[in-house]
Length: 157
Image (cartoon, rainbow, N blue to C red; front, side, top):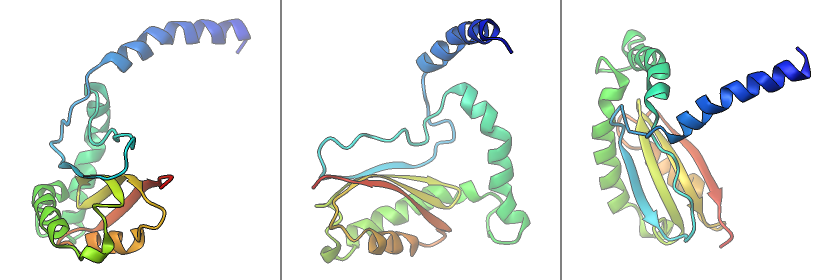
């Protein structure tokens, strides 16, 4: 493709890209999204489960397939893995309230948790001396949690 054709194609796509950037983001799947700690100032909030309508529609088929696959494979007692998420969020909230004080997770982190299909996505900032592996292990002990996915970054603290 010539340079002029590429430039024209890019020019024609810009209005679509700008329109998508202005489209509101919503939690269409009602996935639990918890802001659990705020100790590290300036930690940017993650996008979480918020999507545009177009993103939601593009992902819908795969979300249904992923949600039902654990039932089909015999790994879930409920027919859809997303059906666990509210209960997991409630359990995680209780677990966080009772975690050992020696982890100092409240004093050394700014964290958000997104619960989707039995996975906990851990986003935010942690102090360099925070025992992240232990914290992740403790979160993973929550009933019905299949996996904890760490997407945190270390802060300058």
